[in-house]
Amino acid sequence: MSEPDDAASSSAGRVITRRTMLGWATATALGMAACGRDDEDAAVTGESAAIANEAYVFGYPLLLMHETRKAALESTPVNHFQHSGVLPTPDRRDIVRLNVDTLYSSAWLDLSHGPVALQVPAMDRDRFWLMQIMDAWTNTVHNPGSVHPQVRAGVSTPPFGYVITGPNWSGALPDELTPLPMPTPTVWVLGRIQVDGPDDIPAVRAIQRDVRLVSLEDWVARRPSPAEPLRPPPSRPPAEQVTEMDARRFYDRLCALMNIDPPAPADAPAMERFARIGIEPGGRVEGLSNADLTTAADDAKRTIGVYVDPQTRMDNGWTFDPTAGVYGTDYLHRAAVADKGLGTNLPQDAIYPTYFGTADTYGTPKRFRLRFERGQTPPVDAFWSITAYGADGFLVPNPANIYSVGHQEPVVPGPDGAVELAIQHRNPGPAVPQHNWLPIPAEGEFSLIMRLYAPRPEAIDGRWQVPAVTPVP
Image (cartoon, rainbow, N blue to C red; front, top):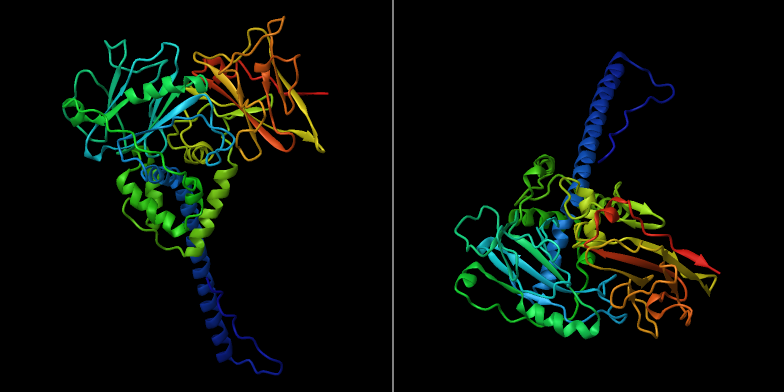
Protein backbone atom coordinates (compact mmCIF):
# COMPACT_ATOMS: atom_id res chain seq x y z
CA MET A 1 0.00 0.00 0.00
CA SER A 2 1.30 3.51 -0.90
CA GLU A 3 0.69 6.60 1.21
CA PRO A 4 -1.38 9.49 -0.41
CA ASP A 5 0.52 12.54 -1.60
CA ASP A 6 0.62 15.46 0.84
CA ALA A 7 -1.51 18.52 -0.06
CA ALA A 8 0.38 21.62 -1.29
CA SER A 9 1.19 24.28 1.32
CA SER A 10 1.76 28.07 1.04
CA SER A 11 5.10 29.78 1.30
CA ALA A 12 5.83 33.08 3.04
CA GLY A 13 4.49 36.15 1.24
CA ARG A 14 2.22 34.12 -1.05
CA VAL A 15 -1.12 35.80 -1.83
CA ILE A 16 -3.97 33.42 -0.98
CA THR A 17 -6.81 33.97 -3.42
CA ARG A 18 -10.30 32.54 -3.51
CA ARG A 19 -9.16 30.31 -6.35
CA THR A 20 -6.25 29.08 -4.24
CA MET A 21 -8.59 28.30 -1.36
CA LEU A 22 -10.85 26.37 -3.70
CA GLY A 23 -7.83 24.43 -5.00
CA TRP A 24 -6.77 23.56 -1.47
CA ALA A 25 -10.24 22.43 -0.59
CA THR A 26 -10.39 20.22 -3.66
CA ALA A 27 -6.95 18.79 -2.98
CA THR A 28 -7.82 18.15 0.64
CA ALA A 29 -11.03 16.40 -0.33
CA LEU A 30 -9.19 14.25 -2.84
CA GLY A 31 -6.48 13.51 -0.30
CA MET A 32 -9.01 12.50 2.33
CA ALA A 33 -10.77 10.28 -0.17
CA ALA A 34 -7.49 8.64 -1.15
CA CYS A 35 -6.58 8.18 2.50
CA GLY A 36 -9.99 6.63 3.09
CA ARG A 37 -9.46 4.25 0.21
CA ASP A 38 -6.05 3.23 1.56
CA ASP A 39 -7.51 2.67 5.02
CA GLU A 40 -10.17 0.51 3.43
CA ASP A 41 -7.51 -1.31 1.40
CA ALA A 42 -5.49 -1.87 4.56
CA ALA A 43 -8.54 -3.25 6.35
CA VAL A 44 -9.32 -5.57 3.44
CA THR A 45 -5.70 -6.79 3.27
CA GLY A 46 -5.62 -7.28 7.04
CA GLU A 47 -8.82 -9.31 6.97
CA SER A 48 -7.55 -11.38 4.05
CA ALA A 49 -4.30 -12.05 5.87
CA ALA A 50 -6.25 -13.13 8.96
CA ILE A 51 -8.24 -15.55 6.80
CA ALA A 52 -5.00 -16.93 5.32
CA ASN A 53 -3.64 -17.42 8.83
CA GLU A 54 -6.74 -19.36 9.85
CA ALA A 55 -6.62 -21.40 6.64
CA TYR A 56 -3.03 -22.43 7.34
CA VAL A 57 -4.01 -23.75 10.77
CA PHE A 58 -7.02 -25.48 9.21
CA GLY A 59 -5.05 -27.11 6.41
CA TYR A 60 -1.78 -28.00 8.16
CA PRO A 61 -2.89 -31.51 9.26
CA LEU A 62 -4.10 -32.35 5.74
CA LEU A 63 -0.78 -31.38 4.16
CA LEU A 64 1.22 -33.16 6.85
CA MET A 65 -0.80 -36.35 6.30
CA HIS A 66 -0.22 -36.22 2.55
CA GLU A 67 3.52 -35.54 2.92
CA THR A 68 3.73 -38.50 5.30
CA ARG A 69 1.81 -40.59 2.79
CA LYS A 70 4.11 -39.46 -0.03
CA ALA A 71 7.19 -40.56 1.94
CA ALA A 72 5.63 -43.96 2.68
CA LEU A 73 4.63 -44.56 -0.94
CA GLU A 74 8.25 -44.25 -2.04
CA SER A 75 8.57 -47.90 -0.99
CA THR A 76 5.09 -49.17 -0.24
CA PRO A 77 2.16 -49.07 -2.69
CA VAL A 78 -1.26 -47.97 -1.54
CA ASN A 79 -3.36 -50.61 0.20
CA HIS A 80 -0.25 -52.48 1.34
CA PHE A 81 1.14 -52.84 4.88
CA GLN A 82 4.68 -51.82 5.78
CA HIS A 83 5.58 -53.71 8.97
CA SER A 84 8.37 -52.69 11.33
CA GLY A 85 10.48 -55.62 12.46
CA VAL A 86 13.01 -54.17 14.89
CA LEU A 87 12.93 -52.22 18.12
CA PRO A 88 14.53 -48.77 18.08
CA THR A 89 17.92 -48.08 19.63
CA PRO A 90 19.78 -44.80 20.29
CA ASP A 91 21.38 -45.18 16.85
CA ARG A 92 18.06 -44.56 15.12
CA ARG A 93 17.87 -40.82 14.49
CA ASP A 94 15.03 -40.27 12.02
CA ILE A 95 11.97 -40.16 14.31
CA VAL A 96 11.90 -38.72 17.81
CA ARG A 97 10.37 -40.32 20.90
CA LEU A 98 9.82 -43.76 19.45
CA ASN A 99 8.35 -46.35 21.78
CA VAL A 100 9.96 -49.70 22.57
CA ASP A 101 6.66 -51.36 23.47
CA THR A 102 5.04 -52.18 20.12
CA LEU A 103 5.90 -52.94 16.51
CA TYR A 104 4.08 -50.81 13.96
CA SER A 105 2.16 -51.84 10.87
CA SER A 106 1.39 -48.89 8.61
CA ALA A 107 -0.74 -48.75 5.46
CA TRP A 108 -2.04 -45.88 3.33
CA LEU A 109 -5.36 -46.63 1.66
CA ASP A 110 -6.95 -45.13 -1.43
CA LEU A 111 -10.65 -45.88 -1.23
CA SER A 112 -11.55 -44.02 -4.41
CA HIS A 113 -11.42 -47.33 -6.32
CA GLY A 114 -13.42 -49.34 -3.82
CA PRO A 115 -13.39 -50.79 -0.30
CA VAL A 116 -10.44 -52.52 1.34
CA ALA A 117 -10.73 -55.57 3.62
CA LEU A 118 -8.65 -55.88 6.80
CA GLN A 119 -8.30 -59.06 8.84
CA VAL A 120 -6.56 -59.29 12.23
CA PRO A 121 -5.51 -62.85 13.14
CA ALA A 122 -5.81 -64.65 16.44
CA MET A 123 -3.01 -63.97 18.91
CA ASP A 124 -2.22 -64.51 22.57
CA ARG A 125 -5.13 -63.37 24.70
CA ASP A 126 -2.93 -61.02 26.75
CA ARG A 127 -1.20 -59.41 23.77
CA PHE A 128 -2.28 -55.82 23.14
CA TRP A 129 -3.05 -54.81 19.57
CA LEU A 130 -4.68 -51.78 18.00
CA MET A 131 -5.63 -50.80 14.46
CA GLN A 132 -5.99 -47.02 14.46
CA ILE A 133 -7.86 -45.86 11.33
CA MET A 134 -7.54 -42.14 10.55
CA ASP A 135 -9.09 -39.93 7.91
CA ALA A 136 -7.06 -37.47 5.86
CA TRP A 137 -7.62 -34.74 8.47
CA THR A 138 -6.02 -36.81 11.30
CA ASN A 139 -9.28 -37.75 13.04
CA THR A 140 -9.29 -41.29 14.45
CA VAL A 141 -12.56 -42.60 13.03
CA HIS A 142 -12.25 -46.27 14.06
CA ASN A 143 -9.99 -48.01 16.57
CA PRO A 144 -10.57 -51.77 16.75
CA GLY A 145 -8.20 -53.44 19.18
CA SER A 146 -7.62 -56.23 21.65
CA VAL A 147 -9.66 -54.51 24.38
CA HIS A 148 -12.56 -53.59 22.09
CA PRO A 149 -12.45 -55.45 18.73
CA GLN A 150 -15.49 -53.48 17.50
CA VAL A 151 -16.89 -56.29 15.40
CA ARG A 152 -20.49 -56.80 14.33
CA ALA A 153 -22.95 -58.61 16.56
CA GLY A 154 -22.44 -62.36 16.74
CA VAL A 155 -18.65 -62.26 16.26
CA SER A 156 -16.71 -63.05 19.43
CA THR A 157 -13.59 -64.94 18.38
CA PRO A 158 -10.73 -64.08 15.99
CA PRO A 159 -9.81 -63.70 13.28
CA PHE A 160 -11.62 -60.36 13.12
CA GLY A 161 -12.57 -59.10 9.68
CA TYR A 162 -13.37 -55.53 8.65
CA VAL A 163 -14.14 -53.71 5.42
CA ILE A 164 -13.11 -50.06 5.14
CA THR A 165 -15.35 -48.11 2.78
CA GLY A 166 -14.97 -44.64 1.33
CA PRO A 167 -17.44 -41.76 1.27
CA ASN A 168 -20.68 -42.31 -0.66
CA TRP A 169 -19.81 -45.95 -1.40
CA SER A 170 -22.70 -48.40 -1.58
CA GLY A 171 -22.88 -52.06 -2.46
CA ALA A 172 -23.10 -55.57 -1.08
CA LEU A 173 -20.61 -56.64 1.59
CA PRO A 174 -19.67 -60.13 2.82
CA ASP A 175 -21.40 -61.07 6.05
CA GLU A 176 -18.12 -61.95 7.78
CA LEU A 177 -16.78 -58.38 7.51
CA THR A 178 -17.69 -55.52 9.84
CA PRO A 179 -18.11 -52.29 7.84
CA LEU A 180 -15.95 -49.31 8.86
CA PRO A 181 -17.08 -46.31 6.78
CA MET A 182 -14.64 -43.42 6.30
CA PRO A 183 -15.36 -39.77 5.42
CA THR A 184 -12.33 -39.38 3.11
CA PRO A 185 -10.85 -41.62 0.41
CA THR A 186 -7.35 -41.14 1.84
CA VAL A 187 -6.97 -43.27 4.97
CA TRP A 188 -4.06 -44.11 7.24
CA VAL A 189 -4.18 -47.45 9.08
CA LEU A 190 -1.61 -47.41 11.86
CA GLY A 191 -1.42 -50.76 13.64
CA ARG A 192 0.42 -51.51 16.87
CA ILE A 193 1.17 -54.96 18.28
CA GLN A 194 2.71 -55.46 21.72
CA VAL A 195 6.27 -56.80 21.72
CA ASP A 196 7.81 -58.12 24.93
CA GLY A 197 11.45 -57.47 24.16
CA PRO A 198 13.85 -58.57 21.41
CA ASP A 199 13.20 -62.29 21.96
CA ASP A 200 9.51 -61.72 21.21
CA ILE A 201 10.08 -60.11 17.81
CA PRO A 202 9.81 -63.36 15.78
CA ALA A 203 6.39 -64.05 17.31
CA VAL A 204 5.16 -60.56 16.45
CA ARG A 205 6.57 -60.82 12.93
CA ALA A 206 4.59 -64.03 12.45
CA ILE A 207 1.43 -62.21 13.54
CA GLN A 208 2.17 -59.35 11.14
CA ARG A 209 2.48 -61.79 8.25
CA ASP A 210 -1.02 -63.05 9.06
CA VAL A 211 -2.59 -59.58 9.06
CA ARG A 212 -4.47 -59.34 5.75
CA LEU A 213 -5.09 -56.17 3.77
CA VAL A 214 -6.63 -56.67 0.32
CA SER A 215 -9.18 -55.05 -1.94
CA LEU A 216 -12.75 -56.18 -1.42
CA GLU A 217 -12.58 -57.81 -4.85
CA ASP A 218 -9.52 -59.84 -3.82
CA TRP A 219 -11.14 -60.75 -0.51
CA VAL A 220 -14.20 -62.17 -2.25
CA ALA A 221 -11.95 -64.02 -4.71
CA ARG A 222 -9.82 -65.30 -1.77
CA ARG A 223 -6.60 -63.97 -3.26
CA PRO A 224 -3.66 -63.70 -0.82
CA SER A 225 -2.29 -60.47 0.58
CA PRO A 226 0.58 -58.93 -1.38
CA ALA A 227 4.15 -59.48 -0.23
CA GLU A 228 5.61 -56.97 2.21
CA PRO A 229 7.87 -54.42 0.49
CA LEU A 230 11.36 -53.56 1.67
CA ARG A 231 11.73 -50.56 4.00
CA PRO A 232 13.64 -47.68 2.33
CA PRO A 233 16.23 -45.43 3.96
CA PRO A 234 14.44 -42.79 6.06
CA SER A 235 13.56 -39.61 4.19
CA ARG A 236 13.55 -36.08 5.53
CA PRO A 237 10.79 -35.79 8.17
CA PRO A 238 7.48 -34.80 6.52
CA ALA A 239 6.86 -32.12 9.18
CA GLU A 240 10.04 -30.35 8.06
CA GLN A 241 8.92 -30.49 4.45
CA VAL A 242 5.57 -28.88 5.27
CA THR A 243 7.09 -26.24 7.54
CA GLU A 244 9.66 -25.24 4.92
CA MET A 245 7.14 -25.23 2.06
CA ASP A 246 6.75 -21.93 0.19
CA ALA A 247 3.60 -20.23 1.50
CA ARG A 248 1.83 -19.86 -1.84
CA ARG A 249 2.63 -23.46 -2.70
CA PHE A 250 1.16 -24.49 0.66
CA TYR A 251 -2.14 -22.76 -0.03
CA ASP A 252 -2.32 -23.99 -3.63
CA ARG A 253 -1.57 -27.51 -2.42
CA LEU A 254 -4.29 -27.20 0.22
CA CYS A 255 -6.84 -26.27 -2.44
CA ALA A 256 -5.78 -29.23 -4.59
CA LEU A 257 -5.89 -31.73 -1.71
CA MET A 258 -9.34 -30.59 -0.60
CA ASN A 259 -10.52 -31.68 -4.04
CA ILE A 260 -9.37 -35.20 -3.12
CA ASP A 261 -10.25 -35.24 0.59
CA PRO A 262 -13.07 -32.75 1.12
CA PRO A 263 -13.60 -31.01 4.46
CA ALA A 264 -16.35 -32.26 6.76
CA PRO A 265 -19.85 -30.80 6.61
CA ALA A 266 -19.20 -29.16 9.99
CA ASP A 267 -16.42 -27.16 8.32
CA ALA A 268 -18.89 -25.27 6.09
CA PRO A 269 -18.69 -21.94 8.01
CA ALA A 270 -14.90 -21.98 7.88
CA MET A 271 -14.91 -22.90 4.19
CA GLU A 272 -17.28 -20.03 3.42
CA ARG A 273 -14.82 -17.67 5.09
CA PHE A 274 -11.77 -19.17 3.31
CA ALA A 275 -13.53 -18.88 -0.07
CA ARG A 276 -13.38 -15.09 0.28
CA ILE A 277 -9.69 -15.29 -0.69
CA GLY A 278 -10.06 -18.19 -3.12
CA ILE A 279 -9.18 -21.03 -0.72
CA GLU A 280 -11.61 -23.80 -1.64
CA PRO A 281 -11.47 -27.25 -3.23
CA GLY A 282 -9.81 -26.82 -6.62
CA GLY A 283 -9.36 -23.08 -6.00
CA ARG A 284 -6.38 -20.77 -5.84
CA VAL A 285 -5.57 -18.12 -3.26
CA GLU A 286 -6.02 -14.57 -4.55
CA GLY A 287 -5.84 -10.98 -3.35
CA LEU A 288 -2.67 -11.42 -1.29
CA SER A 289 0.96 -10.99 -2.24
CA ASN A 290 3.58 -13.65 -1.65
CA ALA A 291 4.89 -11.54 1.23
CA ASP A 292 1.43 -11.34 2.79
CA LEU A 293 0.98 -15.10 2.51
CA THR A 294 4.41 -15.76 4.00
CA THR A 295 3.65 -13.53 6.98
CA ALA A 296 0.29 -15.22 7.53
CA ALA A 297 1.85 -18.70 7.31
CA ASP A 298 4.76 -17.84 9.61
CA ASP A 299 2.39 -16.43 12.23
CA ALA A 300 0.28 -19.60 12.01
CA LYS A 301 3.35 -21.82 12.44
CA ARG A 302 4.33 -19.97 15.60
CA THR A 303 0.80 -20.26 16.97
CA ILE A 304 0.69 -24.00 16.26
CA GLY A 305 4.10 -24.53 17.85
CA VAL A 306 3.25 -22.96 21.21
CA TYR A 307 -0.41 -23.90 21.53
CA VAL A 308 -1.48 -25.85 24.60
CA ASP A 309 -5.08 -27.01 24.66
CA PRO A 310 -7.01 -25.67 27.67
CA GLN A 311 -8.05 -29.21 28.59
CA THR A 312 -4.46 -30.44 28.79
CA ARG A 313 -3.86 -32.08 32.16
CA MET A 314 -0.88 -30.82 34.16
CA ASP A 315 -0.43 -32.91 37.30
CA ASN A 316 2.71 -33.15 39.45
CA GLY A 317 4.95 -31.94 36.63
CA TRP A 318 3.48 -34.35 34.05
CA THR A 319 1.34 -33.19 31.12
CA PHE A 320 -0.91 -35.01 28.67
CA ASP A 321 -3.84 -34.30 26.37
CA PRO A 322 -7.01 -36.21 27.38
CA THR A 323 -9.01 -35.12 24.32
CA ALA A 324 -6.77 -35.89 21.33
CA GLY A 325 -7.82 -37.99 18.37
CA VAL A 326 -11.15 -36.43 17.34
CA TYR A 327 -11.21 -32.65 16.93
CA GLY A 328 -14.47 -31.50 15.36
CA THR A 329 -14.02 -27.82 14.49
CA ASP A 330 -11.22 -27.19 16.99
CA TYR A 331 -8.73 -26.59 14.20
CA LEU A 332 -5.89 -25.20 16.32
CA HIS A 333 -6.00 -28.21 18.63
CA ARG A 334 -5.97 -30.52 15.62
CA ALA A 335 -2.98 -28.75 14.07
CA ALA A 336 -1.01 -28.64 17.32
CA VAL A 337 -1.48 -32.37 17.98
CA ALA A 338 -0.48 -33.20 14.39
CA ASP A 339 2.63 -31.04 14.76
CA LYS A 340 3.71 -32.61 18.05
CA GLY A 341 2.67 -36.22 17.40
CA LEU A 342 0.99 -37.21 14.15
CA GLY A 343 -1.06 -40.34 14.73
CA THR A 344 -1.80 -39.68 18.39
CA ASN A 345 -4.23 -42.25 19.75
CA LEU A 346 -7.63 -41.71 21.27
CA PRO A 347 -7.31 -41.46 25.07
CA GLN A 348 -9.18 -44.71 25.62
CA ASP A 349 -6.49 -46.49 23.61
CA ALA A 350 -3.37 -44.82 25.01
CA ILE A 351 -2.29 -41.71 26.88
CA TYR A 352 1.22 -40.28 27.15
CA PRO A 353 1.96 -38.25 30.31
CA THR A 354 5.24 -36.44 29.66
CA TYR A 355 7.82 -34.96 32.02
CA PHE A 356 10.65 -32.57 31.13
CA GLY A 357 13.67 -32.16 33.39
CA THR A 358 17.34 -31.22 33.65
CA ALA A 359 19.79 -34.04 34.34
CA ASP A 360 22.56 -32.07 36.04
CA THR A 361 23.43 -29.14 38.27
CA TYR A 362 26.40 -27.27 36.78
CA GLY A 363 27.78 -30.49 35.33
CA THR A 364 27.08 -32.72 38.32
CA PRO A 365 24.57 -35.48 37.45
CA LYS A 366 21.34 -35.41 39.42
CA ARG A 367 19.38 -38.37 40.77
CA PHE A 368 15.59 -38.67 40.82
CA ARG A 369 13.01 -41.04 42.24
CA LEU A 370 9.47 -41.84 41.12
CA ARG A 371 7.45 -43.66 43.76
CA PHE A 372 4.13 -45.45 43.26
CA GLU A 373 2.51 -46.26 46.59
CA ARG A 374 1.11 -49.74 47.11
CA GLY A 375 -1.67 -50.43 44.60
CA GLN A 376 -1.07 -47.13 42.78
CA THR A 377 0.88 -48.20 39.70
CA PRO A 378 -0.67 -46.90 36.46
CA PRO A 379 -4.25 -48.23 36.07
CA VAL A 380 -4.48 -49.97 32.70
CA ASP A 381 -6.25 -52.84 31.01
CA ALA A 382 -3.14 -53.65 28.94
CA PHE A 383 0.28 -52.48 30.19
CA TRP A 384 2.37 -49.37 30.92
CA SER A 385 5.93 -48.21 30.47
CA ILE A 386 8.22 -45.20 31.01
CA THR A 387 10.85 -44.34 28.40
CA ALA A 388 13.66 -41.79 28.74
CA TYR A 389 14.85 -39.49 25.94
CA GLY A 390 17.72 -37.03 25.64
CA ALA A 391 17.40 -33.35 24.77
CA ASP A 392 17.20 -34.31 21.08
CA GLY A 393 14.23 -36.63 21.64
CA PHE A 394 16.16 -39.85 20.96
CA LEU A 395 16.75 -42.82 23.26
CA VAL A 396 19.52 -42.39 25.83
CA PRO A 397 22.69 -44.46 25.17
CA ASN A 398 23.82 -46.40 28.24
CA PRO A 399 26.03 -49.47 28.88
CA ALA A 400 23.10 -51.48 30.25
CA ASN A 401 21.00 -50.91 27.10
CA ILE A 402 18.02 -50.01 29.28
CA TYR A 403 15.69 -47.57 27.52
CA SER A 404 12.38 -48.21 29.25
CA VAL A 405 10.95 -49.66 32.47
CA GLY A 406 7.60 -51.11 33.44
CA HIS A 407 6.84 -53.36 30.48
CA GLN A 408 9.48 -55.67 29.07
CA GLU A 409 10.70 -56.60 32.55
CA PRO A 410 8.41 -56.30 35.57
CA VAL A 411 9.20 -53.65 38.17
CA VAL A 412 9.90 -54.91 41.68
CA PRO A 413 7.92 -53.63 44.69
CA GLY A 414 9.62 -52.98 48.00
CA PRO A 415 8.73 -54.59 51.35
CA ASP A 416 5.92 -52.05 51.83
CA GLY A 417 4.40 -52.89 48.44
CA ALA A 418 5.40 -49.56 46.89
CA VAL A 419 7.30 -49.40 43.59
CA GLU A 420 10.16 -46.90 43.54
CA LEU A 421 12.04 -46.18 40.32
CA ALA A 422 15.57 -44.77 40.20
CA ILE A 423 15.92 -42.23 37.40
CA GLN A 424 19.59 -41.33 37.06
CA HIS A 425 22.63 -41.63 34.82
CA ARG A 426 24.78 -43.99 36.88
CA ASN A 427 23.80 -47.51 37.89
CA PRO A 428 22.32 -47.15 41.41
CA GLY A 429 23.84 -50.46 42.49
CA PRO A 430 22.35 -53.45 44.31
CA ALA A 431 20.14 -51.33 46.56
CA VAL A 432 17.83 -50.78 43.55
CA PRO A 433 16.44 -53.75 41.59
CA GLN A 434 17.86 -53.70 38.05
CA HIS A 435 14.41 -53.43 36.48
CA ASN A 436 13.62 -50.36 38.60
CA TRP A 437 16.44 -48.28 37.08
CA LEU A 438 15.85 -45.94 34.14
CA PRO A 439 19.04 -44.30 32.84
CA ILE A 440 18.99 -40.63 31.78
CA PRO A 441 21.76 -38.45 30.28
CA ALA A 442 24.62 -37.31 32.52
CA GLU A 443 23.79 -33.69 31.77
CA GLY A 444 21.45 -31.46 29.81
CA GLU A 445 17.73 -31.66 29.23
CA PHE A 446 15.82 -34.94 29.17
CA SER A 447 12.22 -36.10 28.99
CA LEU A 448 10.21 -39.06 30.22
CA ILE A 449 7.12 -40.42 28.50
CA MET A 450 4.82 -42.71 30.42
CA ARG A 451 2.68 -44.75 28.07
CA LEU A 452 -0.55 -46.21 29.38
CA TYR A 453 -2.06 -48.69 26.93
CA ALA A 454 -5.81 -49.12 27.35
CA PRO A 455 -5.84 -46.76 30.35
CA ARG A 456 -8.72 -46.99 32.78
CA PRO A 457 -11.07 -43.99 33.12
CA GLU A 458 -9.46 -42.75 36.35
CA ALA A 459 -6.15 -42.24 34.53
CA ILE A 460 -7.83 -40.11 31.87
CA ASP A 461 -10.09 -37.98 34.08
CA GLY A 462 -7.49 -37.28 36.77
CA ARG A 463 -8.80 -39.39 39.65
CA TRP A 464 -5.44 -41.15 39.41
CA GLN A 465 -2.37 -39.01 38.81
CA VAL A 466 1.25 -39.77 38.00
CA PRO A 467 3.35 -39.06 41.11
CA ALA A 468 5.93 -36.28 41.06
CA VAL A 469 9.51 -36.95 39.97
CA THR A 470 11.54 -35.94 43.02
CA PRO A 471 15.29 -35.19 43.24
CA VAL A 472 17.35 -36.99 45.87
CA PRO A 473 20.72 -35.96 47.39
